[in-house]
Image (cartoon, rainbow, N blue to C red; front, side):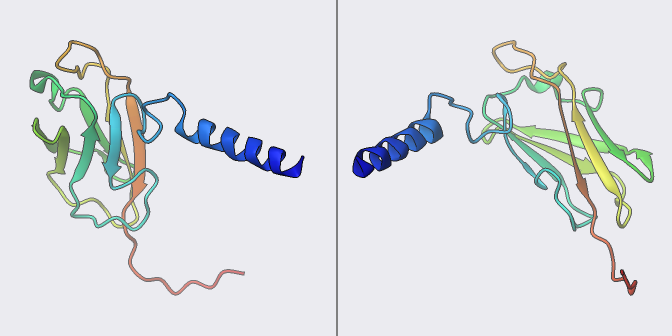
Length: 139
């Protein structure tokens, strides 16, 4: 009986993990991953932001009107955006350095479309820029 229960549990776990959800490893139905990762800390303030999609996007919809980068210290940051169709990668290059310790929020609006004409699900994520040193004592 114990063997049956163990076998049942292993089977259930495998079915649950493998499942039919083809987006199990994606962030949502359109986005595979981001760099920096979601909620990352200690990100280099000179870093570009890269978002990898699992579908080809319509390049005409990749523009600064549909992509916003907001720094909690500086406000809306001016950026350059580019999209590489072969790798399905959106690159966001801030025109200025991000501030040390600043929380950065990246927003993709639903005006971005796939090549099939489908609007993506709006997507927002954040990360924190690297801080320098410190000598505080925390009690």
